[in-house]
Image (cartoon, rainbow, N blue to C red; front, side, top):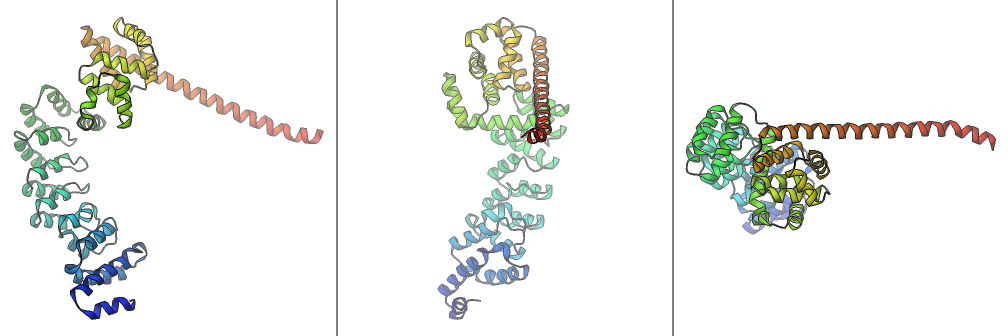
Length: 371
């Protein structure tokens, strides 16, 4: 141990102990990955004894450095996790040194502010989430329901259905979970709008995939964050705003179509698909399918997005929905054919390159001999 640290330890005043806490912490965490388990154990004993005199800034720095470290001594991890939430947050949120039993203990004893942090962890067992659901307040419940990385027990979700009758935010997030059981879906049906009813019934029937649920959740976030900018009638400006917000053409098309802005969707499609707006509108309204398919492919529309566009077209023109299904099936074949054609061309190109290289390699000795 450096002499300066020994001197501080011998001095014994609160100020000396405070400086000792800061310097010992800095000494260890500056080369944390190189410390042996024995060194970390000794460090833990010293820091726990000095912990009460450490400044909030020094304690927070220590918590941040130890948050993701696999070999953090469990006693020290537990000590920091029980500190003020402003200090404990990084370690409480993700430290692998904290066991599920530790988390349950914290849920029973710590504040709702601490529970908000724990509820965001991606490694929560159903036992921990059950405990959080029982002890937490409304903000904690919302965070837990919105944590789509964990599974909630059937009992906890049914208890959340009761809260969902009065809490719109919790209800919306609960309906977007991928681990909803049929019983929970049926319990939610009387509380939701027609569109959500369709989605819940699809889950009951097992026809809604995780990818679709993720997209629904993503669109919900975009609609909230993009806000008033989405109402811009100028598609050129709207697309520039969307690009700045990392919104894809598929996502923006879906948002427009969901809002009933069919003509704006056509305008966006014409710009992204490099087809004159008048020509595309004529093709859409007069059933010139080939023009629409080529434009959508150039714009980069996914099949599900095109399917929604085709459905809205049928609704807008008051024509049978079967035509939308037929257009979607044709579009999928069109994309598959284009992908196969592109792969074939790439294969031919690579084969020609290899053949050319082989010929060049064979010709080289002959040219050398001629020289």
